[in-house]
Image: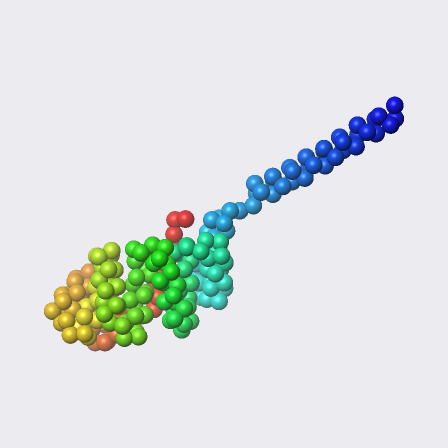
Length: 196
C-alpha cells in the first residue's frame, strides 16, 4: 500500500505546486499597473517636479511617461516646456510637434511652438500657428497679443493693430508690454492638470 500512496501524493504535490505558481502569477498580474497607469503616475510626478523647479527630474519623469505611452500629448508637451526652459529649443520644438501629431488641436503646444518659430525668424509659420491658436482660444489675450505684434513686425499693421486691440480688451495689463518689440509670454506655459 505504501507504494500506491506515494504515487498519489507526488501528482497531488505537483498539482498543488502548479496551482500555487499560477495563483502567484495571477495575483502579480492583477496587482501590477497598466502602461496607462504608469504613464499617468510619471506625468503627475513630472508636473510636481517641474512645479518645484526640479527640471531635470521632471524631464526624467516625462521621458518615463513617454516610454509607457509614446503618444501622450501631455508628457510630450511638458517635456518640451522643460527643454525650452533649459535652453534647448530644437528638442522642445520636436516634442511640441509630436504632441500635435497626437492632438493637432492641442492649444498649449501650438502656442509654444509659435513662440519658438517666431524666435528663429519663421514669421509666416508663427503667424499661422498663432491664428490657429486664437481660433481655438478666442478669449486668450496672450495669443491675440503675440499675433498682433508679429503681424505688425511683418508689415500687416491693420490686422496687427486689430489683434493687439482685441488682446488689450481681454487683458488691459498687456498695455505695459507694448513698448517691448518681442511677443508676450516668452516662457513656456505649463500644462494644466490633465484628466487622464
